[in-house]
Length: 472
Image (cartoon, rainbow, N blue to C red; front, side, top):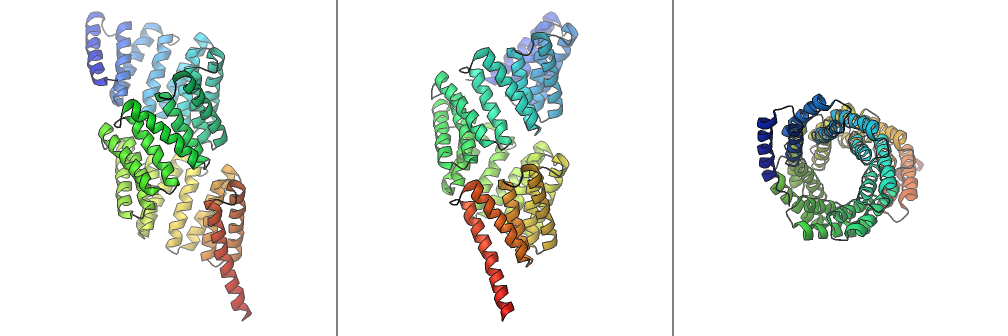
């Protein structure tokens, strides 16, 4: 049981006493600032945590200098809080500084060095530098296996966090293997009914979901939820997260009523735990809105997406990845409600933010071009739509190559616009390409493959009518 408020009071009292006894610039005072910062961080009071940790760092540098174990430890914990407030550049610098000190003091193959490689990798991941993150996490894993062996808590943690980055790089098979290894170790060490085991079931389910093995994903996520409820009860962060992840897979299985119920439960728990204006609450509003949209309850979906957007703008500002995501999902619902001007503005805003944050050649930018093109087409601005879809396709091919789900999606939307422009030959080529890709990626008996056959058939039908009328 974590009674952070009581801990905060105790540490604040300890700080007051140590300043009175030893003064500000003392080892014990620095240690208390550090531990106070850790508790403030746990309470999500990141500004106070940042100040406490910065004070601890300043004292330790003055007392011990840069090349000291305590200084390295403070750089590391400071980086964790900088990461939490999304100041990733500062966090990266803090983690790199801690890593350099620890390598100098302890060498590469040391527990403390491995810990820093892990936190460095987490920040690199958040900055979308997945190659660097993969390298850092692989280095962590190698050190921990050498120090502790395979069947160790830290090794399991490394497999899990490695899987998260492999997932982000769309290497889902590797991610699945990493999460399966983490789960096996955790079950052996802790048994089934443990929070780390629940965490592995949840992350395994996410990988299974991406591999379109939804039945396996459902089982994994249901197991995670059952463990969390037994361990923590309904009103707990891990339980809310499990409900949220379960809802995503239920949605994909078209069990929208179950998905809605799971997401509503996640939202209720998160509002109770964190309040309205919190990152997790905003995330849940988005997920809820996606399911409401699929159930054609567009008014409810619109409200959910608008609420998520408002929270994210307040928390992160306009030019943030999550804000761009909210503009995108809001635009999709506005489009479904035939409010095309509003949808166009939302998609244009999402695109502008993503270009500023990630540049042109990024998968999120390609996604924005694609959704923008769909709305431009609905507004009968076919030339603009064609340009948007061509841009999305070019980015997808450059990033992922021809044989990728995103590339297939881009060929589909491009083909639909070419069809509307009565360029049936070009549309036919695009739809044939989509179909070939989807059969190779998913096989014949898949929802996306069926969609491709349908759109291809529509264009073939129009070409037949055109040829028949020409013959007459």
